[in-house]
Image (cartoon, rainbow over all chains, first blue to last red; front, top):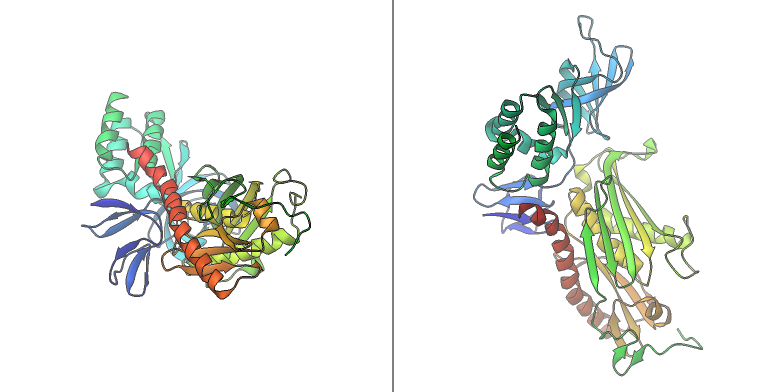
Length: 200
Length: 242
């Protein structure tokens, strides 16, 4: 059974180790608005802020360049740094959109990026970072379906920025916004498939 | 408190606005109405109209206030210049707004899981568009919904409500008239999970028994307020799933 839980709502009469919960008087309570799945024992937040973790892929825009260090805006709170080494052959300009992987979290709001590359052309879409896992889907099903049926190149950043290039960009955007709004409903992958096929 | 030309607040066992002693004013909350805010809520409680918005976690400004072990909370309660009849309703911070901002901040410092967001700042804005007594409690009730809809980790959905004493009668949720001329009034913020008191201010005096029964009234009314708060958040997701 899936149900919406609100902060302070009892999750279980006992200590349960689960993200987005807290333990008080050996009971587990929800700390966010989320979708709780009792069988799977998962609590998926419906709203939230993104805090960076090592290994996550992000998309961002270069905001400044100094002494071989690029600053990249990931969200309005989190900033990424690209430190070029001597052998690097990638050079960016301010305003360039890049994709990268987080290699190190210095502070919650400053991370070091690695394996960066430039994204040429295309447009950026900003959606709520908590909805990103749904955009990718279990076993990449959702994102595969999106790229296949729109013919677009899509790069999804865990920070909430999505880069879309070529293909049916408008359709991809409306599908992504639909996913953002309906991320908590069941049978979404099927509905998106229908939507993409009828509007192709 | 005695006033020379005190209006009659209790008429035939009913209050001046026709309510029973334990009756709340009609309460309506709508969550998530500001697109640019992390979370927001609009609340109408009788004639009170309140807008609450939450931003963050974000970088701390000024930088030296940064606490690398936890988040800091900034809270701004303010009354719009058009919110009230002359007395309040001055724009900009004043003694009263500064005090209320402080007490509201302390309510939320005890509720938000600050350790989850080290080195950051969370901003809570409470704007009173129209005030009619009990604006700080209305502000807290709205801000709790805004925080939940921002997805910030909180221990509980707090509510706040005032109680007052008019002569021998204990009443709940006084309006401006009752607030001004009552013998005592007491805004209280409560964490409904375990009825923990997060804010208690008092103007005037209660006896021990009166205080006890006032709290019973508050906890009883709190159940209704909590239900309306929860309903407003659930509505955000139920309207989509249909």
